[in-house]
Image 1 (cartoon, one colour):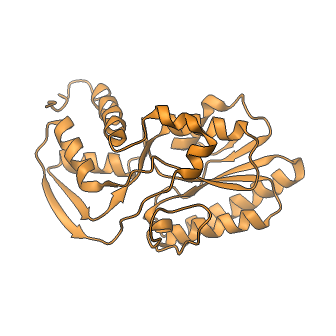
Image 2: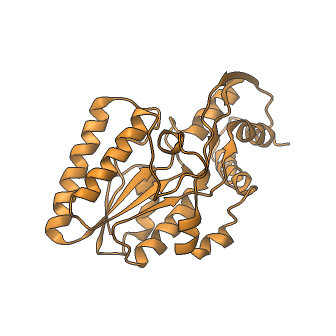
Length: 259
């Protein structure tokens, strides 16, 4: 595969670079769900147009990463499904859905994956877990009461992508997530215990609860069963993240005590 981009997901996908030569992966663009900069959205839209044109000319399939975030599924009643209507409730969600529609209308072979909240080594500092850890180490953390995140480890996502591409899927949209809506408060609880911290919490009320349907994913990739997706999965994902944080703490700076 050819990978367009050099960010967090793109770097992890390099393990598949010798596979799926019929596919171009667009792993670049806006990666911050709180982002609202029109210039960033326009830049991703132009890049998509360029890659779509190349794929049409070469007859290759385009793998496009969309979002299963609150911005996309936050107003859906019940689990967010790929085949149901969505009403984006953030500029980021509206942007991603608009790009999906443009890709479907382009005539290019494609596969759209709506991703949950990816977690892994060396994440960008603006993403949820690095941001939470920085806030917690500073002594306080801002928690949106009612907010949830579907956490999925990037290693599992890479394996799922490999299996989906191997099936030769075309013109499909698939949620890639664990299917568990984890309250952000529970994420903070687990990080606090693992890092040995006691932090002050500043609460803000939001109405942002949503669940991502994984029915289609499980039918296409039954191997996700052995990945342990379920109520306890997020703890394993967080443990992996914290273990890497502790192992890479700067020399001479004591790592936080574990409990």
